[in-house]
Image (cartoon, rainbow, N blue to C red; front, side, top):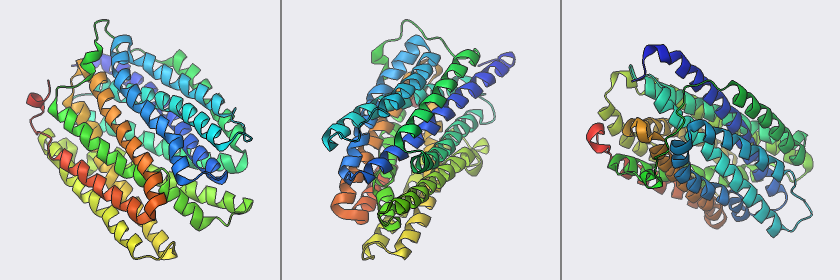
Length: 424
């Protein structure tokens, strides 16, 4: 346990890591919206739009698997700085995209650049989440509070990024928006390099790559649940719902496109900000300070089944509608916002449990493995988002989301409540 005298130093390191993570996620959210809306207006189909993000998620899987070992070997600050730096380079590279290129060339180029951005995102995420385990106070539910605050605030900032990306695309255009974000993030990287206080481990030379694969049944089942949980979100979030809203809101004119961009960006921003707010409030909503860790393990299953009811109801609504209609759009907005609130509680529980299940000496590797599963779920959701929407519209897309939440609940039901004996 960290003694009291060291706590202010640990807190300052936590604040610095959180600030760096905020900056990164602001650009990550903006970039996601810029790419999606810009290439949709260039005529990309839903499946082609999904392809743009495939390498991003594949890179995230590989990165998380390796990053846990890299951080254990070379220290958490090295992976955090690398993540910020690679994102700056990815933004600069994306600004070089030539609109005269053929669609196939453009898809390939953006996939590669997005892959680099995926590497950057997961380096920064793994570093930030692992730091919480090492820096948070252990008493009075401190771990849950700190991880919920980091994750919830990050998602709120990412939500602002969605709005920022849509606004920048409508006002500055694609190239200047990307260059502006690269410049701002580069300044923040320099500031973090100069101002980062001590408090994070420097790494250990004896760390072996084989240690990445966990022997804990709880870590493994939680990772499986995470695959299905985030697949269920991204199957509608990445391509399907933004394109549905674009069809409903835009008349195809430049002014109509701008209006649609702002409204889609606003919805996505509100959704992620709500998600982040509820996530940050999850310890209070769940009364975590007065509940045992075993009780919170059991709660993960119940909250997942509660979540599954929402896409199931939206699937029924889509089935009864003859194409895009005002009542359906309003129902989708309300339902997906409610989905975001319940999803946030599920996600916050997962983020706490992975840190509760692991030990300090292997935290980066268990967190890296867990977020590899997270990226795998996003990859599945991304591919299915374009494919299901193109093949079966809202009904198939939302039905797939329902099935995936059910998978998350079944996997969560395999978690053991004895945290000490299930972690090795």
